[in-house]
Image 1 (cartoon, rainbow, N blue to C red):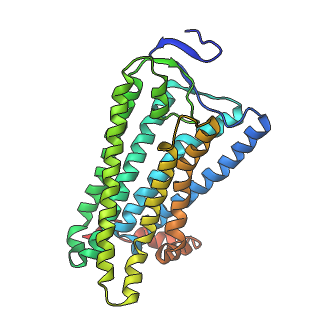
Image 2 (cartoon, helix red, strand yellow):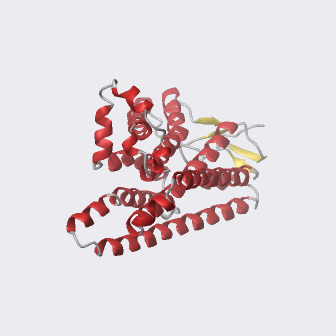
Image 3 (cartoon, rainbow, N blue to C red):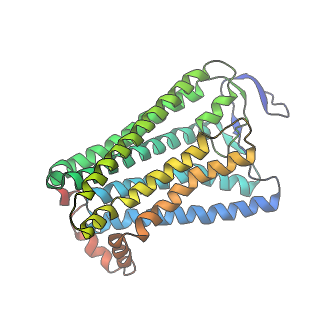
Length: 329
């Protein structure tokens, strides 16, 4: 295999490596980007990991809403851990390469986690709908077994989606190894195709977009019914209390939609490499960064649980309490 200056290849099915889009050719800026990404990555992992810890250890948070929030936090940690560390390493080492197996792994896990993320957000909307519109049936509908099954279904759907897109993406023949992105993603990789096989993956992508659109429609319809039920509550205090449990989730959903629209549904014809990097960075980093702030800063229960973490003497007491799922039984 011989590469020319532009990274072109002649009908190569499996290149040994791909070349990612770099943030800068200036060495000083590469080092700066490394430290910026290190700070952002550390903040994201710390914030989401704190949510996982407090939900797992504090029995007051052993409810369906916080159980699904814990799953969402784990997914956010995974999403940034797939793409950001490799970008940091490339900036530090003045490199743009990623091996073929690593690229395959990035595509698989990113699709898996992003698909599961959308599924969990949809389930969380269903949870809020049942809690507000059917409060007397809440414990019957959202019991521990049902919650575990719904969370498992979200993860399994993500795995199947990941297998589908990874197989469709890397079954094509490549004419180039230069990916116009700082991480491996299916829409950019299929642009390197030499054959019409890429149309199969395009079909998979459109099908996934259709499913995601259906999830967002479900969320919107659920919240229309929620708001209708909230307006029937006689007291203003009751209305505010009900809405306070919904607004963080609704904010996260609209943040994801907003970032996704900018990243994937903007005009591509006149987009530059810098724009691709900017919008991809916003989409992959902003939601995981803001989710802990949205759910933590305005949530009294999580704030109270976080305060307990300051005293390590509380850990044995918390661990000795009932497991996460037993409270819902």
